[in-house]
Image 1: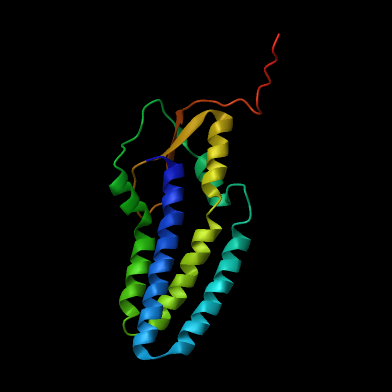
Image 2: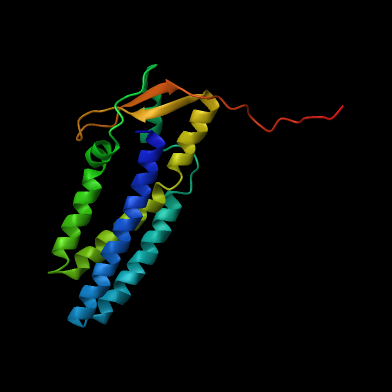
Length: 175
């Protein structure tokens, strides 16, 4: 699986989890007749959005992504492309956090409200990382893929030859 696609999926899955947990919070609060929880949760979500926007303001790759790109092994063959298994093995902590928060929210809806805020922070903080990797790929003429590995160890990348793009638009003059 391409590394850029994993990063995009992470952001989208975080945002989707935040939305689902927010809906669960509102539904459970309504069922319990606790309108104060919704107001406090909405305030937390606004604060979380501001924190995430602040953390994600950089357009360069984060230190962990820069390290993974720097340590990528060069190869001329594509790695195994089992996308479903790769997503599950890399995004299981995010899925587990969302599932556990959703389950516990049936007893304490505050848990889903808090978890939704953290999912918002995560989604907004990582929103530009795929662009940073794409810029590096285009500059260097390579493509980064996620290598198969243990789901509890850091991500290992492989670098394959790609198409190099010339910097800036070319000007053509009519003669």
